[in-house]
Length: 476
Image (tube, rainbow, N blue to C red):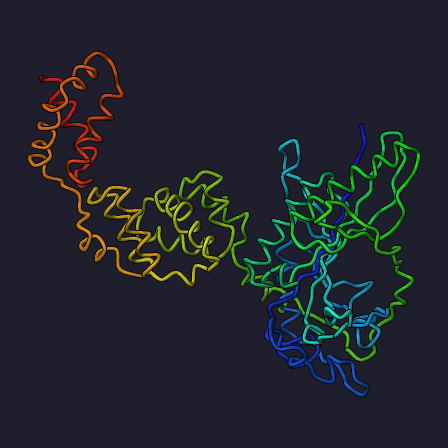
């Protein structure tokens, strides 16, 4: 049977609502410190929280997208603990009746089969404030984040490798993006991931569960999990064991470092939140959200492969976000060569968008101009290299493809008579290459085509050039 790795994940995702979970303050990243807060999110005495209905909509959307059951009758609970950025010394969360439960995400197991990773629960809660440590050693507090709505997604320990957990995170991120539940920007703290790891040896010995925090990217999570698995195995091999604790990942040292002992549920002293009414949902309410769910990434990938005959790699890239998939389908609706559209989006458009650190909405040219460019390339009016040159200028300036082609005189020579005249001249000047080709040296053909293209300043149609050279040489 062998050793077994057990990995479970706890993911916090900030929701993209306009206002906070229990008050009307703006839910906005990047505002001046302590400008988006009020007595409710500061937890001042006498202030009363009122649940934002959009938080329920977003959380249920996530739950349905991850195949969860939705609780029609649930409540909010108080989770008691002290931390400087938690003004009330308790957090309003959910304990024993989460809004969503018993879901799953499908990943590819190490043997290539499809594996369901269980989602134990998704519950709603409020975020805490943020501690800011300055150079002098003082700690300042920004309460803009206090009361920002969160969902906490808790997986079952069904992942048996760091790679499976990495896939789970990627799939989860895709769905949250596609449904516009969260912008999942780890660098801004809108997606945070904690990992629980332990190892069971073939003889039944178990390492103690260790929690990993401060994981600021999926790559950091992957490295931290791989490191911990090795550490657990090494300790067990020496007859020792891990301590039940919380550790953080140190990127500079490529290792995990102990932070504190692990809290237990009893430490939080949960009890029902008396200031927030119970949540009672109807079937109509839940079905109303279910009926407007968008097509999810896995379903879209399968459809792209079937409907547009795209390879799996292309389908994965084009469904990385809703914006990219919509862009592709808009293009294909106007230009039917789906593979050509896919190639140009992946190799030219997305490469430049990523290099510039912008979004598709920031691109300067219209999709119609992009379609025009692909059509003139497909029709042989300009060659592929000229097309890339045109695209580069479109991207940088926003100019129309048609105008760039005219200004730079990039239209290919289609007239066989004009091309033939150039070909004959090149062949007469390179008789040795003609002889080499006739003696079976195929490279000579490439040389001759190159000479004709050079003489025509790249304007001759390469297919016509190739055909004419072979025809004329065969008659020489």
